[in-house]
Length: 600
Image: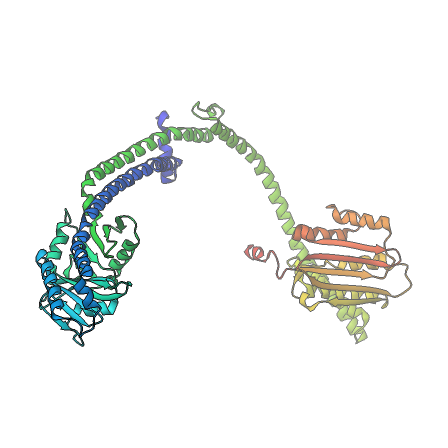
């Protein structure tokens, strides 16, 4: 059981065990390697089959292109004969009164000869634009307002030099297909129209014979987008744009330079006629044509299943082998208190050896930290007791001051400077000893400073004159409590001593680029260079012992709250007074307000 102790760990940690992380990670890594390879084989086989089908379809399309040759060769030959006929030329260039019966008879005889030479021709017609005369194999007549000649009406509506379109003549099904071409004069202008009326049944038979295998769908489309033939009879003589899917494929077929077009699951064989502007589109389903590839797909799926099984077995073997090291670490940690059990298995590599030693060292240091923590907790409790005591003592002071104030009022029966000073001092003390509010609005800080200055003014018989200039926009921002008082107190103790003139103190606050800027300036004796240098060094030092404890304390509190984003500068000249500037970011609320709310 000793060699398989890692199984106990796996059962204990269940699915959260590192073993399963090893297992799943390795399994996925192996799959990442082999699955793309299988997908590549599948895609490659699909590509090869698709290309083979494309080649077969292309060959089929090239064979089918003979349709256009068969359809147009007879018409082109007859049109050439008609164009070269002198009788036809005279009829095309003569007026209605100038055409003789003999010329008409010779032209009809020529048309009849053409008809006999091709069994698929039902009739041939020649129309003269100048004489408005239409000659067929059976009759010759003036067209005039006669609209019965549908082929002529179609030409007049399109004015295309070559047209093909099917028609129903006395039947519910299409029984004729018309081929219409222009006849030109010596100057290249259109002089007449030549029309060949073929039997639609012969046309259908010709289309079917051109394919070795029957496609799923066939479309033969004219230049106008008119469907001349379709395996779906309901689409014959309709326009391609009436069906968006077919029309999109038709537009792609018009633009394609090859003879095969892939459209979704369809392989479309495309053949074009340069002379007649006809497009043949034969549809075949790629899925049905690729039915022969099922055997290869079966082998690919079988191979994928084998790869999946190999990946699972390999991942299990590698995970078990790696997890032995983890189990060795767990054994070492569990027996860290017993020196006899600290032998590290040779299976552990250097990293695991480092982990084991680190854990043991940390366990030993943890005992030392426990003793230190006990001492710190004792000190923390003592600090809490001192804070609670500090909250009790001020109440006694407030009550005593109030008692003194009431006693003076009872004896004097009026408000005196003493009572006012006591009231102001009591109010200032309440703010000073409120340890729960270290951050206060600017208006409260200015009010505290005003109380302190007023007390000092009474003390020095009104010699102190304080001027306040505070931007109203600064009032709602927050600052440190009792931040300005130490600097004003220094003015009273050092700046105004040994001066005969009245003491003037200026306190200003303004908002500048997102910072609050406070200045406290006096007209006192100023500070000498050596003393000024000492004060500036003191402001940069973390040691608050010795003199200037008040202003250094302010600097340290600013550093704790704003770090290096706050500054305290002192400027002074002997005999010209001193100016202190405090600058810190403008904040709208207590920075630790949310944290304070979470403390019970």
